[in-house]
Amino acid sequence: MRRVLMPLIWRVVLLFGLIPSAAWAICDVDYVVQPGDNLFSIAEAHYGDRERWTVIYYSNQGNLDGPSVIPGRTLFIPCPPDAEPEEAVVEPAPPRQPSAELNLLTGGNYAPFTDPNLPGQGLVTELVNAALELAPSPVPYAITWEDDWSQHLSPMLDSKRFDMGFPWAKPDCTADASNPRCVKYHYSDPLIEVPVMLFVRSRGGMAYASDADVVGKTLCRPLREDVFDLDSAGRRWLSEDKITLLQPQSAGDCLRMVAEGRVDAAALNLFVGASALVAEGLRGQVEPLEQPLSQVSLHVIISKTHWRGTSYLYRVNAGLRKLRESGKYDEIMSRQMELFWAGLQ
Image (tube, rainbow, N blue to C red; front, side, top):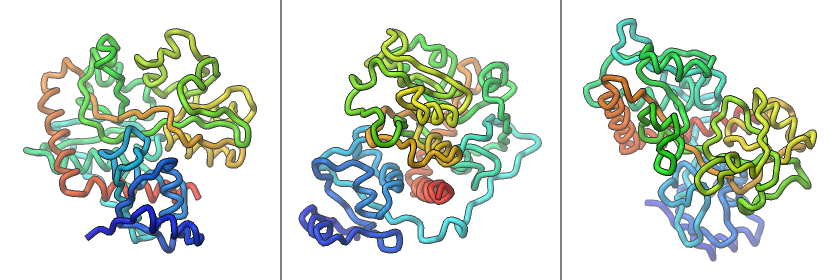
């Protein structure tokens, strides 16, 4: 039975400085969100490590307002996996089938989501493999890796050379049904929801409390990353020239531009930004703000002209539902999050 950590008890714990460490975490409990809380502060209080906030985030999707906590709501604080990251057992991906009925396309160099050298070939790849294993009437399938992402949609998926591709962000098709990505492709249910953060100069960089703080600023996002969230119906930052957007080749380029004062912030998904921050050696110079800018979802996609599009999507979605119902989805997420953050130490 889960324990409920009441706010009064928790305040006593904090009062006497009993902040948990990685070796002694207050977990496997329910916690009632208090005014002023955010995912960073809750993670620091329970795990002694602010960077573990994603463990809480992905265990409480139904009780959050996007990436924000709501005072009065109860969150479950899971315990991280018992095994040390280097000892974690990662199930191998199914071998490629030479006569696959279903051919999927993805690419590498996209940690922690997809890369053939990552554990489980990446978080999203492991989720896709697990979902297809649980799908009704499973068929032989193969996953092909093409690191030139610019070729994925056209010509590779459009020409039906491959049946499905992943992971792709979905624009707001309800608000903008004319978006070319909405017109041409069907989307699976979300594989994962990813928070987008503003990475700013440490000690005196840009602040962000509301969208008004972004208007007039210069942001950076890599050329390969989608910009749907920056031009959503409620923002129109790009179409109405409310911000200046620079798009270099990589997230590392963006973070260097932040450190040099050439842009106000880099708008990056949390994982891409955290990886680049460590790779560029910019810790202490650049940091993510605690308030997420937006949230994007990653999906499997298939062309609307594919003759088996709806049946293939049904398999993926049915498998994802079973994956969540079985608890294996949470297990994969928790393990992959631990591996990712441990790899950045």
